[in-house]
Length: 104
Image (cartoon, rainbow, N blue to C red; front, side, top):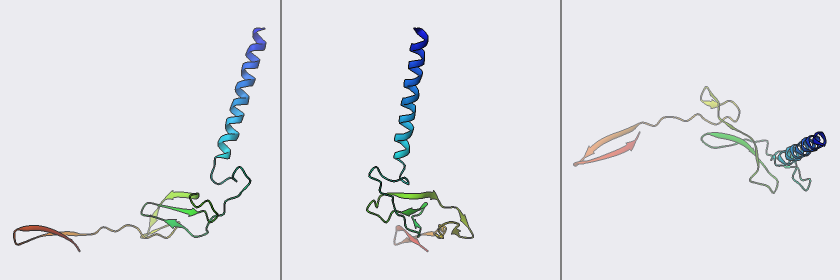
């Protein structure tokens, strides 16, 4: 009786694990949605100061793929072509007793 209970417990745990794997795989943004819709993505990179990605061009505009940090070489990102950030020089000067800052 004890062997049967142990085997049954392991089978239940295996089924729960398998169901969890299926559930988490379905949550991946690059996989089709539950209704079978496959996302379509732009060939052009979208980027900000830190990251680049391919944005969805279907009705799911909040979905992205290939979201990664920039990797710069020779002043450009090696994947998306974004310009590397530059340092701006700030100059402080005194005008009539007040201290002001200005970008160069």
